[in-house]
Image 1: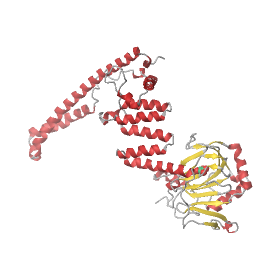
Image 2 (image 1 turned 135 degrees about the vertical axis):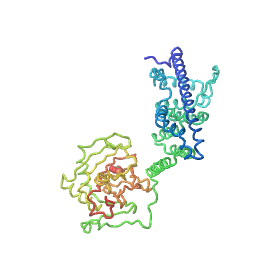
Image 3 (image 1 turned 30 degrees about the vertical axis):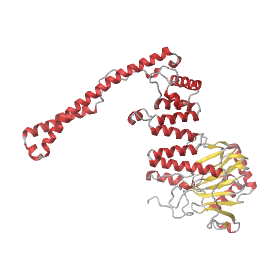
Image 4 (image 1 turned 45 degrees about the horizontal axis):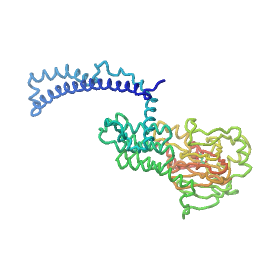
Length: 477
Ligand SMILES: O=C(O)CCC(=O)C(=O)O
Ligand SMILES: [Fe+2]
């Protein structure tokens, strides 16, 4: 298919197309003006009458020469006037919207953009200089405006040329003035959309510093403060997450945190106490050392092998957020598995009879699991029943291997990072005493730099914990 942008001959057709559009715009403006004039005559008439009635409305309406026309107007005219108001201005202009705009395609735009960028490269011009006009070309006041810069940026983004794209977006913002905001909104290139686009590109490259800078700029422009503040909080979590992954978690030394033997969460632990290291008291995060025997680890890894597949997120979607293999393992299927399941109950203090199977996860080099929470919010009463049945009150994360480099489990909101150590179990409570999902439990698995990382996750279902955890909000409340 021939593209119009390839030859000057075809480009003239595009110009003619714009001329046609111009004719229709003229007709439409005329129709709008006509409607405004008619409406204003009706309005002025009504205002004049209102002036007379203001001082003494009761006497005013007592005059039958007033009351009859009033009733008549409200009965006969008002409906017609409203109908006229609701009518689209220019609805009678048949010609409008007969265009074949699809004649000019995305490919045309791409080609035109490509041509202009080639010119930029040829002349060695900066984006700003190019937008001012071409050296040596006949000057028709030919300059690029905000929408052109945005289109060039979008073209470059598609080609993966993010840096250059961002230059164009910045220029788009600089050239923004002059056009009424309403027109820019109509063309969907208002400041907010441009900044949002910059944010999205930074975010897709995980450039959180970049995202933060733009969000701060948005705050300065006074844009949607509440929304931007929420985004800033998320960005700060991302930045904190990367610090934690690099081994810079906050110091865990605190007077209130202890290492002790757990003899209490189940009677059996009096005979076989577990080594427990408190990592956070509120929310509850503990690490149980030497909790699982090497033969047990091997056993569950073997059980999972035939079922391993690429892990999904949400409703079964492959996503970079979760770059791992996983498999569900039924611990009740083998005697060794049942022993381990009992131990998981003992060490967490929860009842697992309503909980999912154990999820085995294998991360290779570069594997990671982005920030997420294992629980979900529901303020909606209608959904509460379903919510209480399915939500995850706690998570037990078993580390099945040591990891040579990377692979820390990070809790950005707590400034906490846990290095996997073979045979230990990390336990945390996802929900607070009101059975509400605790945002502070946001967590992630850092990328694996060296090693083979196996973990097993036991999500603990909220349902059925009434004997185990007190103070839960009743559904009726
Ligand atoms: O592998 C990790 O460290 C985290 C796993 C996790 O968050 C999960 O399975 O829900
Ligand atoms: Fe998780």
